[in-house]
Amino acid sequence: MAIHNYHELMVGSAQRASTAITRLDLQFRHDTDRLRSALETIGSMGLTPDQIGHALSLAETMSGQRYCYLGVLDADGEQLHAVSPVGGKCASVGRPDPLPSFDATLLEAVQTDDGTEEQGSFLRITVPAVFLSIPETHGYLIGVLKLSRKSSFLSSAAGWQAFSDESNPLRAWLVDENNHLKAVCTDCKWTAPPTHIVTQLRKQLNDGSGTIASFSTAEGGYALGAIAGGTDILVATPRTPHESSALRTMVLEISGLVFLLVIGLGGVTLAANVVLVWPLRRLTYSVQKWQMEGVFDGRITRAMPLELQRLGQAFTRATRRLSRHEARLKEAMAHQELLMREIHHRVKNNLQIVASLLNLQAGRISNPEFRAEFALARDRVRALATLHRSLYAEDRLDSLNMSSFLKELCGQTLHIAGEYETGRIDMEISCDDFSMNPDQAVPLALIVTELVTNAIKYAFPDGRSGIISVSLTHADKMVTLNIGDNGIGCTPDQCDISGQQGIGLKLIKGFARQLNATFVQNCQNGTHYSFVFPLEQK
Image (cartoon, rainbow, N blue to C red; front, top):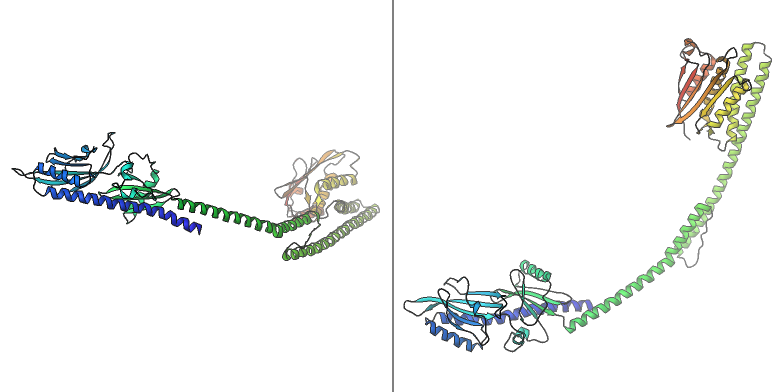
């Protein structure tokens, strides 16, 4: 209600300014119409210039000396007679420049700012006249109304009625085509309104269909319109005490509403925090603690909403079930790991027993070739036993650390061949630190055992010394195995891996296919094998 009342009062201030322009226009039209009618009547009577001057003096007296200047000009604009009231000083405004044509009355607004007493705003009426003379001559009758007045005149009974209303004080400025303002009151020292107000009113006047543009601001109302003669005038009306009171009432009521709104929002926020946000945060914290520590602390209070109580109870039941299920899974995994370690341990023991039996059987065979075959079988079985022993010794059963396993396998092969203590053959082993699953480690171990055993037996005959190198590298998901020696090498026929080979080379080719490996054999400067295969990820 307060906002509505204030809005109506604000509109009222603009309406008062528009009404003031209308009243000023009516009063000016009355004065200008009377002056123009008098001049046109005198000009058409066919009087001599002297008679016209006498008639103008009579008209000035009858008007109560409201005119600033009345004069008679000849066709060249030279003054023949002039009538001015006491104190009137606007004769310089009485001569049009240039002179108008003789066919119509001219009404125009004139502003002067030359620093003299004649500066200000004026309304000038020029009427063509015919003078009684022989021959007949033409001239002009000039009447000037002064628009700019002193405050004493504006507030007097003889002045402008719009300024005499003490309940509606006005300020007015005449506006030229460049939006420059000239105060109607010459001695009031009014502060001109900002330029943007004049621009806004001018735009509103040009865009609209009315003759007066107006709007209200917090300071009061403004209106722009034309008065008699086409002179634009800007009127400002300040806020009345009633409007100021309405503004204060509106501010107080809005402040009260804002205060109540803030209090209400604060209460709603606090209630939401107590009833909803804090319990949800507590529940979120309990879930995070359960994720990190495995303990769910779902403290439920009666102050919590029923839905959150049920949600907390559901979380409590779910986390307890998950904890029990997780404990059972951990127990099952531990049992499974124990069984796998036991299986690898038993397989290793069984393979060692098989290797021992093969070794005993080989000792009873007198044929050297048969004894050598038994020894090869024994070495292969021992390689598998070493792999299973490494598996159950590792922390993980699904992968094998190849660096430690390869060093142990090569050292064991050299030791079984009886060359570890002699020092005749050195082993150079290099391996990247990575893991491999048992499905690939088994054929790889058998390849290494086969090739290292062959190098020990055949690469260094007649007590020659040498070096066997084994390297295993991993890069870009590919594994490269290089095994070579600097022994006597092999013949070109032996290097032809596509021809007939012994069981050892056939096993190597079979294990390479199992690894999806490509391999190359080189018999220059010893015997060298290179295998490249992809590393399977688990």
